[in-house]
Length: 193
Image (cartoon, rainbow, N blue to C red):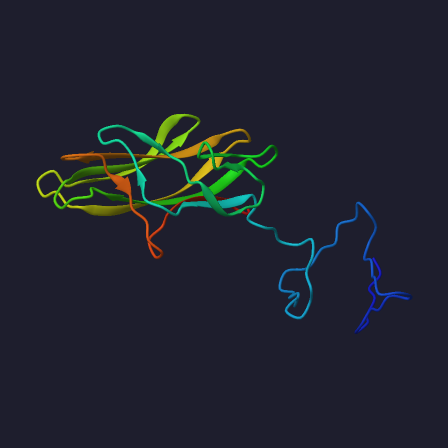
């Protein structure tokens, strides 16, 4: 193997420089540093796509004492059009299986003081309850409460996710409460591995 000692390599013509030929392996030795701080980088690293975040922007009534599917009717973004605002389902696109960071926030409101006795927020995978977080207030009911669910899950193409909420309200049907600083939302993004 021959060693070439130079301080700078410039293309002979134009502004494009190619190192190696298709199929070659370019090796950077241990201890070497590649400084890309001033470079425009393309084709390296990756993006956390697909990703989406959907939200509810108005108070939304649901039925006490049963699991209610939550539909988030508007989106902040959806890079693969994988979230359906009419069904509340996020479906992993073809060829996009892998680990996903999944997150949601739901704020329930009993509409009257001291009536919220229990709240459960549930992540459904392919139609079945898969992950949940819960709070009990039976001995000391409150009016409003918010839960957050965060998880990392391995998903396959075609898997779909939905959020559900279950609340026991002492005297009526609660709602999902919204204001400008406390929205209800659901999102996910694929993790770069």
